[in-house]
Structures are given as C-alpha cells and as structure tokens.
Length: 201
Image (tube, rainbow, N blue to C red; front, side, top):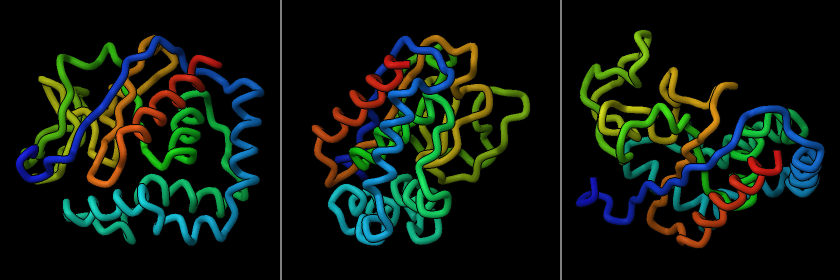
C-alpha cells in the first residue's frame, strides 16, 4: 500500500468518552452549520481542495465518487434532503461536525475491540469484515482498515459488526485517512474537533 500510495496515512487517537444524547451546545453547533451550509455550497464544495483530494483518491482506488459519494458530499446531500444537519447522538454528531468543518472524514471504533496496531490493506477474497459470527464476507481487492487480527472497516465504508461504538463503549478509537492533497493541519483539526465535541457530552 505504501509503495502505491506513499501519501496515504491512517491517523488515529484514542479518547475516553461515552455515547449518549448530544447536549444543547452541540445541537446548536449543528444548527449553525446547517444555517451556513446552503445549496450553492453543496454544488461548489467538490471543487474545494480537500473534497477534491478525496475524489481523486476514490478514482485511484477504483471507486466512482459520482456513484459512491465521498463522506463530505454524502453529508451535503443529506443536509439538502432533510433541510438541516440532524442531531443523532453525541458520537455521530461529533463525526459530522468534524467532517463539515474540515472536510476530513472520521470513523469511530470501540477501542476495546481493537487488537494491536491499525493499518490500511487489501482484503482477501471472502474474508470476514470483523470477528462477529455474522460478519459479512468482503470482496477481494477492497481496501480495509484492519488490526492485527481482522478487517474492522471498509475504507470509506461500513464498520464491522461488533466493532463500532455502542452504549457500553467507554473508550473510542477515532480514525481518519489522510490522502495526497490533504494538509496535516486539517487532519489534526478534524480529530481535535471530534474529541472536543465528544468531551462536551
């Protein structure tokens, strides 16, 4: 992976935090983002440097960003369809706020379900996504985020069953993928924003 995509980096941080309802301040922050995010913004956002960098990376790994939307564009479409960024819970709200404010997507895993170091690799044909007995099989060649035992998430896709954040989670592993064209300062800001929102809950 490093030879083919030398600027690809998986960056993460572990934070002590529990899921739950978003406090009033977080809901107000989402409302403020909704008020500033208009239709014209959604139309032009893909030309901005960071969203464009993720679109380019999608094409490099065989994904069509016009069919499988990048996380930022998917959030923009939901905002237009629903009329606002809807508050779900403090974890999903933290991930959404970080994404909308920085353009950098973040995923959350239950840190207690991670074994060893995390990295990005190519899935073997038919290997399970996660260690749950009902884990779905992965198509060969798909990029995944994996620990030392198994794949834990499809890159820019679903988190493995049993490895995401639940109501029993007390430590979260927050992960993001830096690609060519995305400055490190934006990655750091996204993670900092996410941690800040989680701790406000």
